[in-house]
Structure formats: C-alpha cells, structure tokens
Image 1: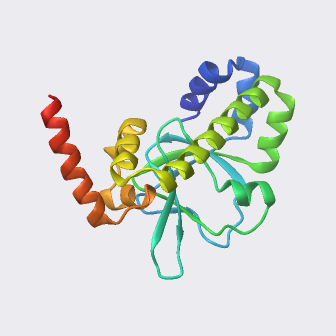
Image 2: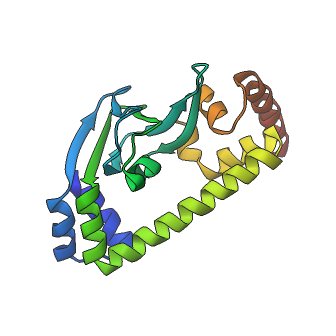
Length: 197
C-alpha cells in the first residue's frame, strides 16, 4: 500500500526515493472494514491519514442524534480531525469507513518531523492546507448564500467521484439539506440535465 502514497508524493511533492524512505519508515498500513471507526468522539486525533483505497467520512453527531457530515475522503485524499490533531484535544467528531478501506497513518510527532526535515514536503503540506482553507471558506459561503439547487450542482461538479459512492442522505447532510429537499432538487436537476442533452 505504501507505493500508492509514494507515487502520490512523487507526483505532487517531487520527493526523492531517499525522502520517500523516510516517509515509509513512519507510515502504518491499516485496513478498515465498512462502518469501522478510525476515530471516535473523545479520542485525540494523533495521526494524519492518507486514503490508499476506499472512502471515509468525518462527521459530528448533534445533541438530537443528527449526523452532520464535515468531510469525505477517497483515494489520494488526506483525512484527520485537524482541530484535535493540531490542538491535541479530544475530538468532537467521528471518522469511519463508508467502504472497506486501506489507509496509511503517520502519527503527529513523526508527521511534524517529516515536514520539518523535508522542505519539499513542507511546501506541499502548506499548499494542501491553503486549498483546504479555501474549500472550507467556499463551502461556508455556499451554505449561507446559495440555493439548494446551487449547492447540489456545485457538489456534483466538484466531487463526481464522491457523489457516486456515498448515500444520498450523507450528501444531503454535507450540503446542508434535508433528504426531502435533496430528492426534490435531484428531480429538478435531472429534468434540466435531460433538456440540455
């Protein structure tokens, strides 16, 4: 499984074989079954997780029992509860597998050491963080200013690989809609798309 991460880092961070060996030395392969937790509320997220195969979600459970989806992660995406990871505080969230998955974990201490000792990795992580902040800001803006139809269309266009792999109720949660509203929006969207074709 490490070869998947190695290929990813060769392409995206231009790491050398020697640098990749440093990363390999601190990477732990873990298999997750569908519905298996990687993180539960109250745990401290002390790892950064690279998804080699499968699909994960980060979510919160509200006081009324409602699940609020914060993120999805599929192949070649990273996942952690970054608030817990950065602050070293107990997580308010859960991470579980939506499919049988293979992930590579790098614990916080070694991840930080790698980032400090490999300048190209540090630059790459900075770019990832900047993209994540931008995506988060855009999502907040979309959720407070876009119509239900616009939110759905943006999700479908931005994440087609995720769209085809996760239940609709989770997509509804992620874009801040009820299941009923999403059903109505999907019906209208399908009619619009068929007219275009």
